[in-house]
Length: 136
Ligand code: THU
Image (cartoon, rainbow, N blue to C red; front, side):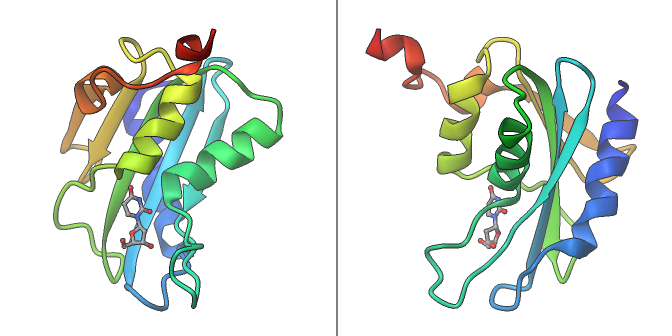
């Protein structure tokens, strides 16, 4: 699947964010190796800490469906759902990606629009991450 199509999927999901506290909408589109796409949105909570980020929302949906291999994730977001800047993934989400993804191959794509985006490997965003192989 091409990057622009994946970005379109994330942008389309953005209005679905449940963000009554921060008003900061985030959406992600996660591309599996079998080319299926799972979107995720951030879901906030009155107790604040149970809030789940968009990226983890997408992983939770995909892993529930039995997916274990992933190629890329697009992330976009902004206050009141208006994208004005890149939205980098938080540290917890980077660590969740590390569980399932090859750090040198998995692409993290930060998008402002279908035309304007930046691509990183997970390794660039989470060098020397702790992964499943560290427990073996
Ligand atoms: N958020 C995400 O969804 N993903 C990130 O990686 C960064 C932060 C959400 C959590 C919260 O709902 C809002 O953005 C403000 O922190």
